[in-house]
Length: 176
Image 1 (spheres, rainbow, N blue to C red):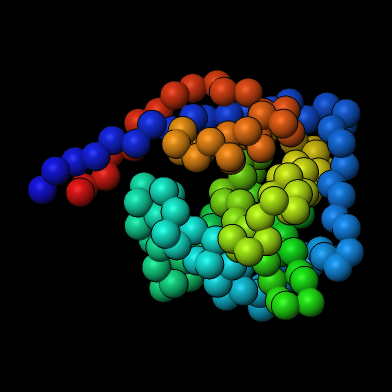
Image 2: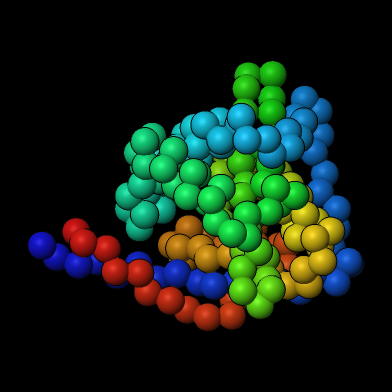
């Protein structure tokens, strides 16, 4: 079996209170974290990542049950931060998700940002990132990071537009 290596960037941002607050225009609304919404987060994650490069890097993202297991694992992390975990609702249902945890440092770690394909290009990804960063800031954290697959140029551009800068280049080995 061949091994494929995917280039990933660790991107970081300082949280000094000067970030632009999240904006969400109608008909979209925020839905705060609630334990009862774990499956909805998993479903939006699955719909957002299936067929995308990240489902090759992390196969669980391309599998509905894998997303459910992943969401439950994120929820059980000791640093899970409900203030950095959100859904975006539309009249058609949930269309965006983000999860955040407090990592060692302490530093905020964005776990996943997903927007259902039909809703991309509407600024929802940027709003999710900013909402998670606001949650980290309100929790007293002053730095945050995320990791992104280098081939996902739209995501890299989005994170740079918010203010993230590449801190490190990593390689993820995946059995082919």
